[in-house]
Image 1 (tube, rainbow, N blue to C red):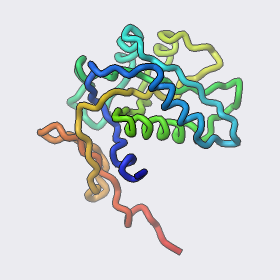
Image 2: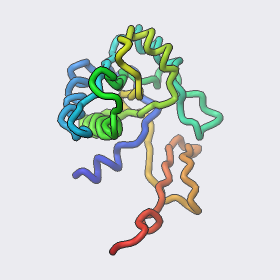
Image 3: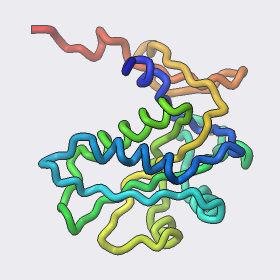
Length: 190
């Protein structure tokens, strides 16, 4: 069921780095994005698939991890992602990318979860440095880096208390993600 996939689709930040993801798997998930909706059907998004350990090692220090977890600097070496999908906007196709990036990222992550993997959309990226690492053509602008791997953490959804939506990690390592209750986000039913 889609509800189960959405509940499993958390922002995973710790992975079993020993479990590699073949490029054909990444292609399968990007194909889900290709089939997804696109504003005006412009399809201005392009993807760079990273499975080379050399490239992964260069990209990792360019990423920021879990802003609310002030005492955590990111995953240990054995918990780093085993692949990245870099989502870029092709400015030669369209000036804007509309809402395509969110739709595409969700499609990719739902595919990953369905296949027993998980990921995290990372916006805290040194985009100019990553662009140089991957030799990105000038017409492409990095939007997001999606970190992917076999999750090695448990992440659960909780109801937010007093509108406190900051995620947190318990002593047992479980990652808690507070969500505003339904009666708080539905303004009215007419």
